[in-house]
Structures are given as C-alpha cells and as structure tokens.
Length: 164
Image (cartoon, rainbow, N blue to C red; front, side, top):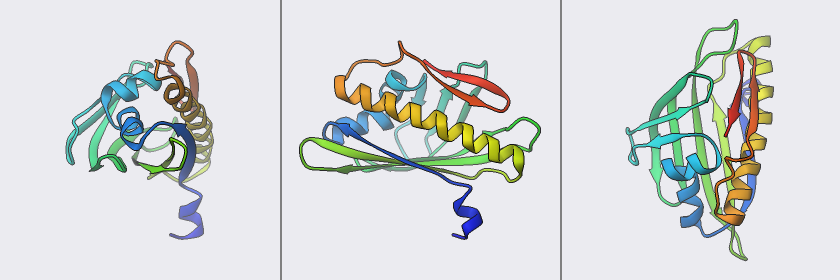
C-alpha cells in the first residue's frame, strides 16, 4: 500500500469484554450489530447479503466477503456517496483477537474511499463516527445489553446519521 492509499483507510480498534465467540456474535450477526449500532441484517456466509439502515431514510447494503467465525468478518460492495462527489465502493473488515483476562481486541479497517477534499472530510467524519460506534460496542460487550437507547451520531457531509 502506498502512503496515499494508507491515508484513505480508517483503522480503529477497541478492547472489549467477552470471549471471541461472544464478541463475534456482537460484530458479525444482525441481532448483535443491531443492539449496539443500527438495524442490520447479515446473511451469515461468504457472498451473503449485508444490509443496514442508517436512519436517514437510506438503506445501504453489500456482500459478506469473509466469514471466519469467531475471528474475521468482512463486507464489501457497499456503495457510499459523499455530498458533491462520486459514490465509492467501501469494504470493511472486522477482526477479533482474544486477550488474557476474558477480553478481546476488535480491529476495524474500512477502505475504498474516493479522493479529493470532499472525501477527506467524509473520512474524518466517518472516523469520528466509528470511534463513537466502537465505544458503543465496548459498552454493549461490558453489559451485554442494548446501547441503542443512547445514540451516537455519525455526521457525514451529506447528512447526519444517528446510530440508535
């Protein structure tokens, strides 16, 4: 990857409570993702459909590109449009790594963004939104109860998306 490509990637991680299997349920299944992020459906297999409701009247979907329980889950072919820019096709990979003491590290890498100032702003906003989302995941895994009652907001250049 070139230095320019590196800057077009969002890479974040969070330490959460739980076994890899429990964390997998939270990050790779529709009910799990829906509990801490937004309403989501996952056809749990490679080439299955992945769809989520952003709460802004738009539903985004793509394909499951990796399904390796309880370690790796990835989606691709998600069309994302930044205001005033051409749509890009995003891919997101989630990895779970067990740590000692009943915790795991969850790593999220999102790529496929467009170029230019509009996309630079979109990446900044998505990065902040995903930081908040990963904090919701951490809280959800700590208590295994829905965190959707205290929404985080993902502000993007074309609207403000609420993670309920």
